[in-house]
Length: 336
Length: 236
Figure 1 (cartoon, helix red, strand yellow):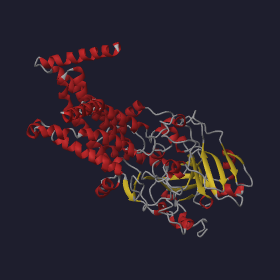
Figure 2 (cartoon, each protein chain N blue to C red):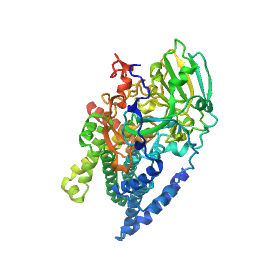
Figure 3 (spheres, chains in turn purple, brown):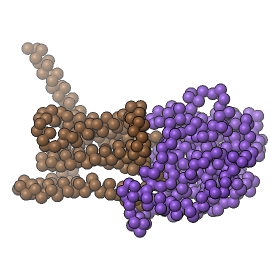
């Protein structure tokens, strides 16, 4: 592990760098008005509230406050993406392919009780309930960039613990080389799984995978919350993977199974279009998606439509310092 | 059968009522129809604006806006292509006079779609826009369709029609190509799930086949006729 990831002062988040949520909301409201006027859609707040009501939004699933210790951001100084954008712009095809579908259709998802089965090449296979995970592994805040393969990005304060903590508990056998993950399969709750037209023609359940050393990397976390509270269903409640140096689709949501294997496991987008989505899917500005450029990205931040910025995409999403050692001797143009 | 002709009669009756006024040189009927079409094409834009302003199009509505405007192009294009078959079927030639306004609405949606992509997604990075047009097949296809629509919009005035004479007709048949390029661009742009674009492509091919000049059966018959004539000529 070339560079250890101890409590290094470089990653400690100074208190003043965190914006309290109340200030966030207030700032957000002001900027929203400004942003709207920028596109000529300036409306009084009252009218806006009326319009919102007219379009309707289902009651949002309740989110509980979580306790956590410490916050690290790994050199990322970017402004956080406001919470209301993080929870209303999601790719979760199990609920539909539009960015607004998950927030609209995921609220009824039963996330409690929930358990994750850990199986395969491990000495101590078993089932872990979310309560047990929370009891066993203290949560920490991780402020990570999320770079979507569609060339937009966010900065999100996740709450979670390192996946390696769990893996160390279950003890991978000498034959374990890969870790496979699986999302819940329940067509009754997930409308996209009951209809190919709604679910974007994907074969469910959604599956993802990492090499064992990637899974053991301290940057790889299992997240159970964001912005101080449990995850909303649209963001992958109650438990999801976050791998910040890879495209977002690797960070599989609503996990029910973690399976260690000797062979490389199949992964959903790679199976669907292997020339467009590789197994590794490391963020790489030098390798374009066949249909669009990956050299830059739209950063979704505060403010309205035109206040977004287009910024250069960094190799490994800016985490190269910590992860490039994993890929020494590999041709990342071929193994994209 | 009976139901089909019944609804046809009913539609004909309705169109007759609308067009009689026009025939009497009191074009209220045509004026009313045109106003209704302007309203039908414009209201979706108002809806889009309201949805974005209300924050009901998601935390980052860029993709929603671009997609919405793209669908607007396809729908107005379909309406434009439906005019002449409908006029022929209903024997209401006056309907042709609604075609230009529908075509111009289609062009309006195309301008907005391209502008939204360039300003909201690429954020005005024109060099990126240029390289994307050249490097990405689906954007190349979309851009080609846009250039055709631009030419058709520029030559849509009566003056241009007069000036171009027979060439005008030939130029404006290029809209048939747009009717294929549009759905192909849609198909190519989605990450997965090609069902919807496939349905659009099928619908446009069906719309094109309604034209005598593009109808497969008519073309086949024409081919046979010509072959027969050719053989007859040979025998003599």
